[in-house]
Length: 209
Length: 162
Image 1: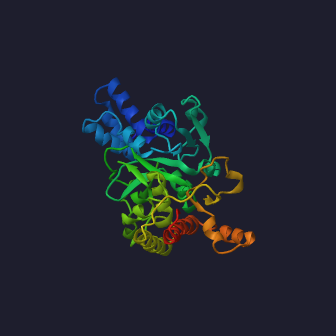
Image 2: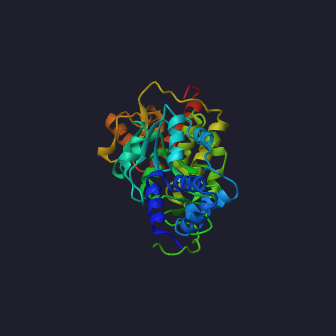
Image 3: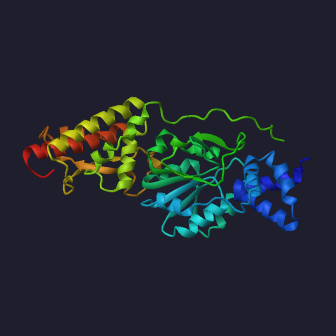
């Protein structure tokens, strides 16, 4: 039986931390409170939140944190002077901000979940600017990148925030030098990715698997 | 409560069948003398053969490869003269979203002098310059790339720097 209050709490956390970051946080916290308590959350939340289901599967295999190939991202952003991130994954954003002092960063302030972007951006100490979808092209350029998080990668497809598809059209594709997808899950999701959308991998110029 | 999970549908495809043509490594070689930076060159190549209608991509590939072969046969691959007025392609941005950054244009330019071969009339050259840099990048950037390759051919035939 699912617990509606747990689902509400998870949804709120996922809106501001990201689906993957919230999943790892919940599992670590529940396991710390009572060994084995995380199993009920994997069953309950995993049925509603497919990223939690995928993270839960990784947890059962012994993983205790997200996939985060920061060096792979930095290599693919070589020559890029500013990047706009679409979607929120707090652990990955924290790492990118800390590792890229010379990179101008923006975050698109749209989400399929409820999110207080003023509060989210306050965590970055002024390093990350708010970018509305209407203003996205102001960040375009021959050394600009669009970056989003991928929720599992298979041989030809991945899942992303729907905000990616709202932002990346035929015009913006040729106004940004790099279209980077950064995978945060250890394995593709086996079920339909609710709150996410499936796109072909070749929609990106660069993928960090 | 959200609806239950269901099986994933087939994925969409961004690229059309036949795009394997665009993986030809000779394309990168063809632009090497025009765009020095590998990342910038990759961006320019994507605009030519990776984006836009498939018939434009394939046409760009065919024309660029043949022009590059001509340049190679003439031993003409050399950096273009960047000292004079240049033709560059600005990104087609809504006016209110244009910034003051230099890089809101594509990372390639060619000497405007290549057009001046066709007319002594500055107004006519202006009109030609406006035409070749107009349109989406699969047109405008491709035009500038091909003008660059043609400028190299002409310079090689005349035995002078490009």
